Length: 540
Image 1 (cartoon, rainbow, N blue to C red):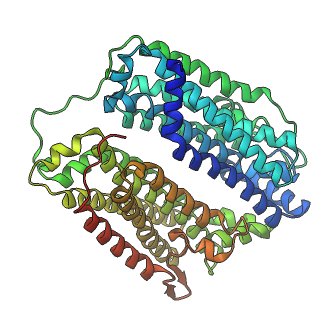
Image 2 (image 1 turned 135 degrees about the vertical axis):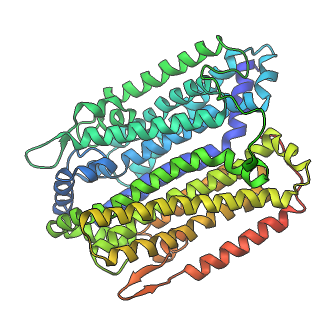
Image 3 (image 1 turned 180 degrees about the vertical axis):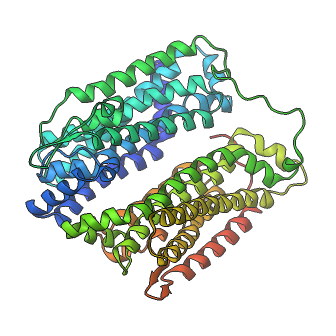
């Protein structure tokens, strides 16, 4: 077998679990999305009302796709195509960085580059590997949509559009891996580009021109600056345009080629963006192991806190607008009540829905923080810490503690921003309490995932990243989208996000809070107890 074949085989063998979870999850989301559309918007009038409301509300267009007609397929693309593209983009980002900058950090790249494979062939194998992963994602997503009963041509185009966005971010991540010194820096840079382009797409759609019958939208020019915008401009199940998708493919391949060229211009373990110089001696604040964990993770925590603040202020400033829309389209209120599970007024329902999204953001922050322990172990830096009087139980406990503190910071930012939104709008004083209760409940739910990530780290160290993030994704799908997709109530209640306390009249319905607290305590105790006997597992 040629050197290229060996490298490609190695990547496929190494990534089979992660890619299976990403690809199958994306296909299942597409299939479940159709089930939700066919149940919640069964009639043409329902879909027309929702599209008319969306076209009249720029905020809805920020977080949905491009309206392109009232057929079931076109409405499904409006609902889920941006999220399918987002999953493909994240899959490609982590794949690209893992096999380039990640291998350099771990010392594997140097060994491979010393063989006849040389410096360029491993990166080329990564490019091919990423393209193949996106092709499989496109095919399985298309098959899921066809199995749901949608037209073949539109289904193939929807799958290919999502994959084209994935390939675009494959190129972006490969370029970021050349620019940044660490895999963490490369992933962070790519995710910030992802968030920015997702929002730019939304701004382009929100600033577009609606059709006379209020069933479709012509995007403004900013949408054409984003790979997500290119994917949406294909308009599956409507005009079925192929050429916008080619922009994403071409963009990704050009950046991938540029990354190969840049790699030949730098030394191994070097980067084009220099790292910030460190101090000769540590500050007193870094004199403890938990302070070191905070130093390693504080940058990402700040980013998640900003996202939490944005979510909180949207939760309390959009309730009046949603109330107005639901007056014209009662289906909007029904959908929000399905997602939020709240029994009060529409303002309370809107807050509950947004704070469910906040819980997911906080859980992502917690998982990213605790998974850092696995990165430290895999890179060998944990051994230097554990060679000191710091024990392994305390070492892991510090990551869990910082993860929980990170959750509290993200939730606190959202609650304070939500209160500012209430104050600026002159909202009902009862909303202050509703926001506080929703924030507290989601803080407990999100902390569960810090403990789950620690348990996975102890029991399945080499699968920590894949399994921990998959648990968040599964809980988010069940908690946020399960009611819309027509799943039974018990399945949605498996998600911690769906069983948090809500205000019920003058009291508070605690729902599953005590079970969450019990699970949090038991999981934390179990992870720390098992860590006493676990050997270190360096390497990926």
